[in-house]
Length: 190
Image (tube, rainbow, N blue to C red):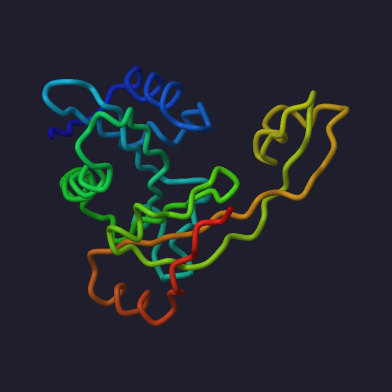
């Protein structure tokens, strides 16, 4: 298995074809890695600043010290997803040495419980506060997308989904802090 920095084209292709959202969030292009196995392109693992600049504030980290694992868009032909993510974490330090912690989210509405994070010994930190969502032309859209579209008429506000939050760190002090506040891993929901 080999990882290297991914092009915008590779990110767009992998996310549109192998990620349930089919949407390469703008910040997914911040620090993406392409995954190859046996010379074949298997997809991308994307890191970036995430949805909020203060993602690390609850842990005493400033912007840039804590980033988000934004997308894992792989075609399943790589040996192990956890191995690919693990390798990306190791080389991430080369490209972003200031980063001390990674945050990622699993979406129970998509049947995800964060199994990969459990397998890699990430810390489960609980659920997020549900975000505003809207129904527009029969499609469910996130509140940020709704606002970015200029708050179109005819949309109906609905209760948003809550995600499962996971954290990973190399820093011993942060690790101790997370160990004291983490929760038991959640079970996969039906």
